[in-house]
Length: 196
Image (cartoon, rainbow, N blue to C red; front, side, top):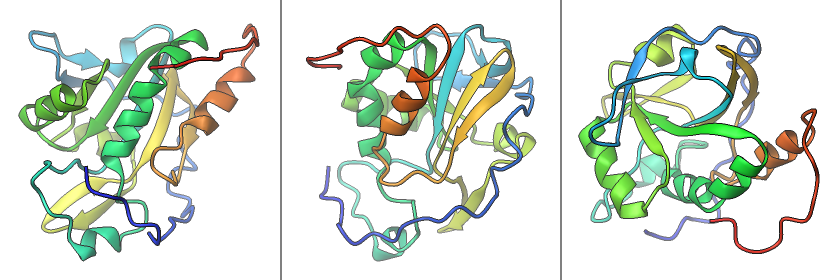
């Protein structure tokens, strides 16, 4: 994993996620990376589901162009995935039932990422942008591709109950954990030690 520059442009809240709280999750199936595994329909899952949306992950041999680094919030998909991996057990402790990453890359591409990074959760492919467009998630164009902007959805009972956007730095999971601590019924205690 190449070093993330320290002078990345910081994304600003453009209001494109303001509509999402209480927005119904579309009845759409998405292919997960676990094999074999049935498609996932986020609208029917029970419990608390977190979906972090990210533009794309690069391969280890891929050089990252300056044009990618210049897009506010684009850089850092691998650190974000690893941060959710490292906090997986802690998120479960705070009531998260399901955790997924979602991008518009193919399932085959995502499988390599899941295996290489040893992710304990599935990545979901929305390569046709059906989920992204139905939920009206913000996107951007790069190198002829339309990619979803980085954001985090918290879903419960088929509705979005919280959206974190924009996300910076990309590996910041503390805001999600802090929000989870405020939910009714959460017992606060000392969670010292490793969380991965």
